[in-house]
Image (cartoon, rainbow, N blue to C red; front, side):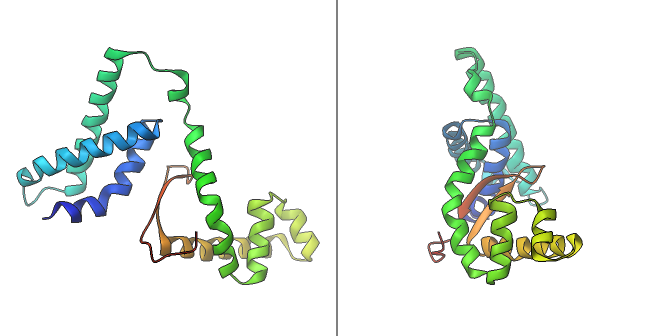
Length: 180
């Protein structure tokens, strides 16, 4: 088993896990590097029947615990380090230039619908009345549009969601995708 294969398969999941435990993005990157080194040093000790994913997340969990133990010895946590909302705002800001090219790839009526409901925050009930549609029909079209948009995103990006479905991280799959 090659380190590159393991790391490419699980890096984004590990990063999302770390973001759920650590609020500072720089610390998350440092922890990812530390986990990569530990994985490199210990990959040979992995038994054939062991689950790679479980093993990696045990390393990540222990590394996070060690991080907080060391941090607790050196200084107290600052209020900004406990605030998790900032990361979500940064991700949305980072990803916002990508949304328009993907919307342009959708049919015009679907793109207009998603812009109005999801980006501009227009009330779905009011929008349904404006278009002369039933609310149920509009909800169905919004769901279909979101599914189509998600498919376009998945073609270009790896992304991670938290347990509430909120975006917590994304990475471009390759340089071939020029949408953002």
